[in-house]
Image (cartoon, rainbow, N blue to C red; front, side, top):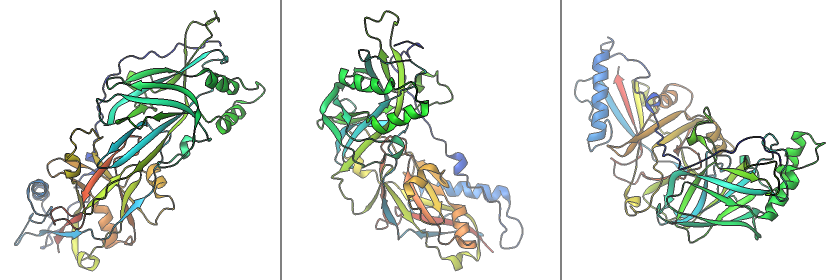
Length: 452
């Protein structure tokens, strides 16, 4: 093996706090100022003051958002439309080539028993090394995210085997099954609670098999060589013990792709080291992952009759908003807000369990129902987005344009899909109050308008 570059050196990785800014998506002053009953333009300052009071009361008053913003002779009114008809869509999101790769096992009494097997395949790029000898060492360096699902203080054990079927990260889905070859163990290891990186030596049998593809016929083009590797080498599978009490998340995509020198952007990778008798080389060389993904299953999930339960991995909400169109067409609509109240009581009973927090929800609108809704949501930007309002424990989504399109336009049949967080490899789940709940908790749309 001829070394071409220095290895990446890692130490204790610093914590990284990611914030989400929804301000540009939730502006309530996007559609201008409408006329009052007398035909004069409604004063801008007064309208802004009124809307500020409206949002404040929405978080503090016990009644439906906006129901008491104005009474009597004032021109601004509101109307609440409750969401009655909806469908929970059970479709699996993509689980490969994401920023985080889950690995672990956890029996969550609230969201079911979850098992996640990580799939990894090392690169065969010759830009790092010319050859990999059958006697060279190959190891896997795992870099863990700060996020943990389950018992964050527990030690977990894992075994590494070869996958028994060819897979491609870009095609993997949650709840998809791929067999594992349990007859040939590649390695085993454990992860303590405070560890954020770990190096695991891989078996000689695996190195020999990998070297055959790395050192392929030199007459082949790079594309031919890579194609043979993709369609014939199954890669490895990190299998958690079912006695584990948490799920950890590997960093598998730089968090800051614009700065590859940023220590926080370091991802999990492979290291190849020369045969000890080879005096021409003096250390390991980094080989990044060629492909990666997750085999995830969720079983024995409890049911909650008065809740809507969503998972970013496999469950979203679909509805067509049923509005009193003829009635609303006589009004100047200035603002419409979709309200989803979060029910925190199911998870409050298990405060010892650490779960990634759902900080925002997304709304996608399609003219027609997609053949693959999860793929469409994955590749497209949301039409609407809302952060969690901590005071009301509700997501308040500005869907003014959607309501305007349905009331005044020809978009009455447009379908909205609501999903939680994003699909980034972390697991997010949330409970919401359903239409059988009290009025102050039901999913609803509050429409604010200026009467003609």
